Amino acid sequence: MAKVLLLLKQKENRRLLQQSLESRNKVLVVESENELLDSNLSFDLCILDLRALIKVGNWIKKVKKNQNQLFIPFLLITSPQNVGMGKLYLWSVIDEIITTPIEKVELTARVEMLLQRRLLSLELKRKNENLQQLNELKTRFISMASHELRNPVHVILAYSKILYKNSNLPKTKKDDYFERMKSSASKITETLDDILTLSKGELLDQNFNPMPIDLEKFCHQLILEIEVGAGYKNQISFVTKGKANNSYLDKKLLSHILINLLTNAMKYSSQGSTIDFNLIYHKEQVEFQIKDKGIGIPLKDQKRLFESFHRASNVGRIPGNGLGLVIVKQSVDLHEGKISVNSEEGVGTTFTVKLPSVAQIIHSDKIAD
Image (cartoon, rainbow, N blue to C red):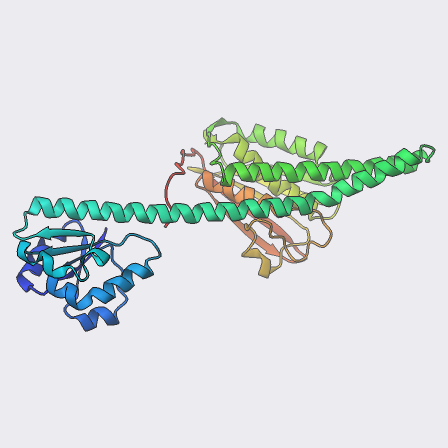
């Protein structure tokens, strides 16, 4: 609801305007100039008469200057013969004039048009701020990518040069070098995949496509892929609980969620330890629990887990780029789900994801407050 400020010296006019406007707007009334100057009122439209204009003209200039190029409309109500008396402030502070006697239809139309211009101005400001944030994010992507990709590229170049110059190296040495090159190549692929995924979600409004899914079968296939391809020697213990329901989820986004959480659990746990993966069916939602007995997450880092590029302070030399959990959070949000974490440093971590069984398509064209 828009806020309309009334600065009218004539009490009867003020009463009639308030009565006319309050059904569709929140009407603010200030009795004196001192009350106005001492306050920090927030409003979307100010309606005033000539007597008020003469006294608060400088205040209006200050308000407009402080709006940082936002449109804040001021509507002057005056008689036809008094229009000329307002020339001192008129064009620098007043956006519209309406002369008495006032037709209710005309007043309503003028108010609605000014409020619409105000709304468009606010939306434009928000979109500009979003664009600035996206540009900053792109810059951080480029900086992070150059940092994350430089080292593995150097490793590959260094070992390929050694292999090229020393063709008679023992097989064990060659195998070791090839393995290191393979590991570096995998890191490059992982980083590029994460950047591409996050860019599609945050910058290009990734498509959201829920469809029927057999969750138990889906999870079994995912576990097999991870155990074969991830390169970790951990076991995943998969358990289902509750009665299976008809789930409609986005398979690609669900893959992002589970793959990132499961590979993180393996990455930050000792080799050979077991990762507990529970699928729990509820009446109108499904719950995924992934529990490890790894290094845990320090309390001071838990509040920043889902920030781009942030990594916990105790990860040491364990590789990573700080994007996986951002992708998880974004994918959960697109399902209108929730994610929580329970972790203790040196003990382990449990991530819990709850998604509605039947996900609804979310429109991404809303302007954030």
